[in-house]
Image (cartoon, rainbow, N blue to C red):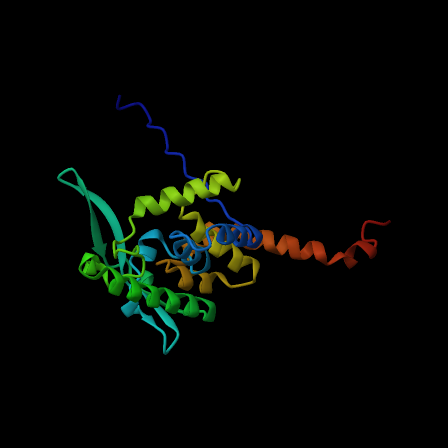
Length: 228
C-alpha cells in the first residue's frame, strides 16, 4: 500500500453570478430571512461565518463603516451542535468596509424591527444574541447550515446549478474585476492574507475582462494588417 499514490481530491469549481443573476436572486428573496445574508455575501464578499458574526456594535452608522472582526460557526459537542464564536484566523480578515447608503438604510430598518420584536415578545425573547444582526424574530441566532441549505435550494430553483453560499464571495470578486477594481483592492476588500491568493483565484477573470474590452475596440479590423 505504501507504493500506491492516493487520488487527489477534486477541487470544487467556484461559480460566479453576473449582475443580472444577483439582482434576480435578491428580488426572489425579498423580505425573507435569507435576504440579508445573500446581500452581504454578494456585495461585501463576506464569508458565511462573517455574515452570521456581524454585530450591531461593529456597525458605525455615524461614520458609515462596518468592522468585520468576528465569526460564527457550528460544531458538534457531545452529540449536539453548538455555536462556536471566534475572531478571524488572520489579521487581514479583520477589516473595515464602507457602509453603503442603501445598506445603511436597510440595516437601520432591521435594527428597529429587532427592537420592536424584543418589546413585543418580552421575556420570551432570547437576549443572549442581542448584539447580533442575524437573529430571527425571537432573537435566535441563524444557524450556518440552514443558511447554506436555503441558498443551495434557491440557486437550484433559479436554474443556477450547484452553488455554495461561498460562491457569493466569488461573485463579489468577479463583479469587482469586471468593474476594473485592482487585485490589490479586491484582496483588501475580501480580507485575503496574501495577494497571491487573490491573484491565483481571480486573475483569469481579469484577463477575460480585458478580452471583452478588446472585442469592443473594433477599429483594428479596418487597418488591414493581414493584407499583403
